[in-house]
Image 1 (cartoon, rainbow, N blue to C red):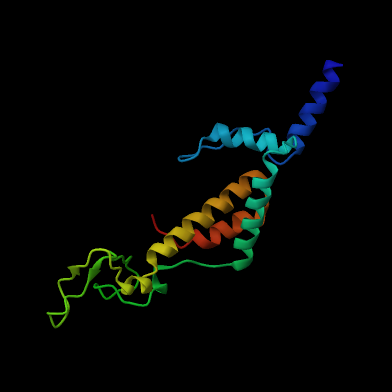
Image 2 (tube, rainbow, N blue to C red; image 1 turned 90 degrees about the horizontal axis):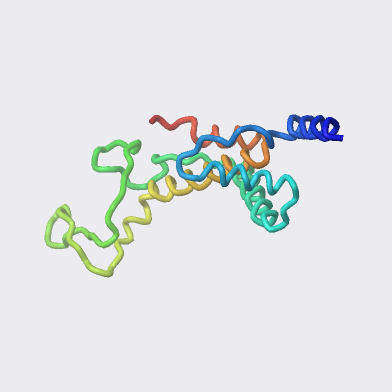
Length: 160
């Protein structure tokens, strides 16, 4: 009986998309926790299924959207003159109305400068991080190749 059980487990573990592989090396998420959740999902732990389904639906939405994030999508040009430069602006700083060029900016406490709405670099970065995390986790749990391809598509142009 033990021999049959051993062979059954060997066949199941090698045939199911990565359930018996070692835990991934991660920086921000506990890999043992990821591994444990993957195994619990595989055996049908119903407490994790709503979150799992939500993650897969979000990954599918990201793949279908096919969005590529870039710092050149912003409206204003950075002071350097190069739209490829990351740009941010403090929300409570405004052009000085007493200076012809408005510089240096002055602080208006509690009043948000509407100029920052045109500077989308921070929003683009947030979306990139979110989408990459969802796609990577979805690929880890679901092993659907299109998720890996989509993650590559939105990050391949980055230089580290």
